[in-house]
Amino acid sequence: MFFFLALRNIIRNKKNSLIIALLIGVITFLFFLGNSIIGKADRSFRDAFIDSLTGDVVLQRRGELTMNLFGANIPIIEDFFIIPVLPAYDIAMELAAAESGVAGISSQVSGQALLDLQGTREPALLGGIDADSYFPLFPGIILEEGRLLRSGETGAMITAQRAQRVEAASGRRPAIGDPLLFTSLGDGGFRIREVPLVGIFSYQNPGQFMNEIVLIDPQTVRALNEIQVAGTAEAPPEATSLFDLNLDDLFSMDSFTWFQEEEEFSTDLLQSFLLEEREELSDHRGGDWHFIIIRLEPGVSPSAFIASINRKIEDYGLVAVGWRVAAGTSAILMILIQALFNAGVFLVSVAGVIAIINILLISVFRRTREIGTLRAIGARDSYIRSLIITENLLLSLGAGLLGVIGGAFFIRWLNSLGLHIPNELVASLLGGSTLQLDFLPPVGALSFAAALALGFSASLYPVETAVRIEPMAAVRRG
Image (cartoon, rainbow, N blue to C red; front, side, top):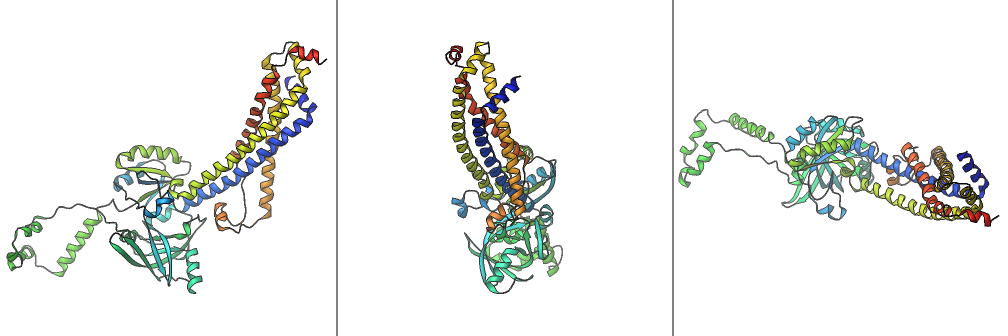
């Protein structure tokens, strides 16, 4: 009986009901369509960065500023920012590997340099990688020519887009084995390194700056960045004993008898000594990597993983961040774009609510006799409130469903057109040069909930007006 009465009132006031349903339906449609486009772009961004560059979680040095994989996340100081090296690298690797849900771990040292290739000079973002552990983490890296970089070798890989630019400028496509000349400027002056080109690759879904990345051996990046591996070693007594000699004794033959105490000095002995020194230095790890990149197994929550590992690495001056922070400002701006869009929808919704309130107030005044009669026969305030709110919720329910369904059919129609996206940035945001949007159930549910909230909030003031109608008003209306 209650719902029947509510439906009857909606039908009796069909003109006002149609206007209210139209307003709620249009706002729901806009909310659903806009958030579907933004959600598609955000998912494309997420897949592009996680599968090609950042992984799910990145460990970096804790500081006042958050960092992406190639600099600070504040553009104003990005050009003057030096990425700090990781403290306690070995400990961080052990703690990360011990966490459950880890599918793979790799390391990266980053830098920037000027790349000279076939007379073409361009700035490049350098990703010094541990190749053996890096490439298995990222299925989004596609080899186009040559081969993948190997751990321990000196070489670099450039993107296919960079190769096309060089070919357009020089008239010849870069070939495997061509020299790549890198120049950087540091406190010690200019530093120049030359490495061979070992491969040309592309990203499955490149982000805004990913085509500028050069994957290179970490030793070259450290040399260009003036990063030195710190280590401590105690000098042997026979080496420090030379400090006790005076200047005349230093160049006498007696001072070199230590070479012949156990075995005769030879080139083999010198080579063996240098080999031992190299092995000793290679054991000192840490202080020469900027980031630890972690891929998680499917179904593992990145937020829960980050919270867990942050409790363990906090004392070592490290912090774990998600893919969005590691990707940089382009991914962070996606949240800002979504917030700005929804702020615009909110302003439209406020205007819609005001219009709906006015319509409902007119409807309430027209129903004074009906409401007064209900109160005269014993209807309580709660009954009047429930009746009017139910009417508006039923309208909101139908309008919300129509808005979401209409948005879904509109998306399907757009996809059928196969529209080409000429702008490269927009194409990268939407995951391809052909416009293809997805129906996102969470966005649909949120849009439907927004429609119900819109109808409910618009009912509050008219309901309070209705419950103040006295039974005598019905008598005066006849």
